[in-house]
Length: 90
Image (cartoon, rainbow, N blue to C red; front, side):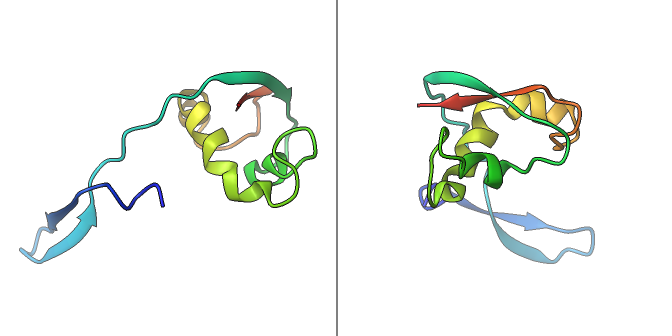
C-alpha cells in the first residue's frame, strides 16, 4: 500500500531499453515508543511479530521498524548483526 502513491518513472538502461519503475519513496517519520534489544540472528519480521512489539501478524508491519531504523540499518549493510537495539514506532 505504501507504494501506491509513489510515481512511476522510466528507467533507461545502457542499451537504451526503458522500464517502468517506482520513484524513490519518502521515509515516513513516526513517533518512537521505545527501543528493543536485538541480538545476532534476529530478523525484522520476527521482531515485529513479538508480543511486546506488534504481536500476531506484526510481520506485516516490519517495514515500520525498517523505516524507523533506516540510517542504522543502512550503515550496518541492512543486517541486524552487530546492532544492539532497534527503535519501535508507536
